[in-house]
Length: 385
Image (cartoon, rainbow, N blue to C red):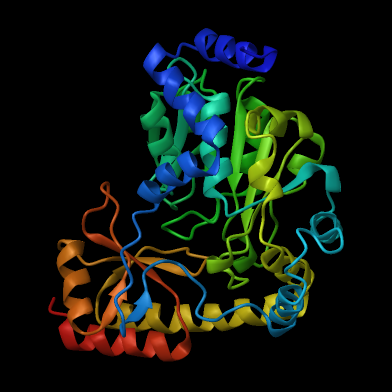
């Protein structure tokens, strides 16, 4: 028997212009929860399979693992692994994050990474008639979910400074359901100003959702958009512990948003995805998030490694897209990026891919000082102007 929730969900999708086939896909995505969403998310990431023994600077991972204090907290939870939740760990995480970010704990939800909620917001708030607007290039997960379910996707070029062109985004589709800003942007590492993000929040349709993906924000010594989610019901902030905190394999992400906004995204799984997080990851997150001095030191180490390689490339006359404030940068080879990616891999250095809009430009992740020295040496070996 159909429940009231199922009926209202179906009616909502039909009212937003989904066909029967699209409706089935959307229902599967939200109803199946993590399984269906991860299927879409894997395609969105397009991360190359790691090559054993190579210098791996292609997936925007941190070059090292969690802070030692966080790893110790996770190890402690291993000994209590017989309990689903030994001591209210979820709430401890929310309280720790709330204290750092200055937002109410009831507006924080934890996830196994950030691909799941990013896909959910596309289904819950976009449609064939109320589309998704993003920058280009940017992180494509929401593009692919939108295309899979049949929602309209509009891609807008970045500004001359490689930020999201928020006014052009609104002009491109004034009636979209979702506007997506990734800041720092993946793949460019460039930041869109809080003033521009605020402008888009204030000028978009009142019933549209602004998604601000801050997966790389901890690499930036500057303001963030978190507090926008403290009082607004139309803004969703995405965070992850995969980057600066060195927890990519532990799968822990966060959303900051109003409970009302989240309720629509989480229907049909009964909260199973967010309730089934590994306690080791949660404990690691609790211990990490408030470590301001450790965060600052790791950020400084990354910046030094990044700038050394950027300077090396420029000295050889190789163009680097300017303005990155994250653990990645884009290299414009002036020739097909795939060829340079292959040449560097032959020199045992695995860099990232290119984006279709920039076929001659590769993304390079920032690794340790030793790894970036190996990258520089590989450049010396393979580069021919």
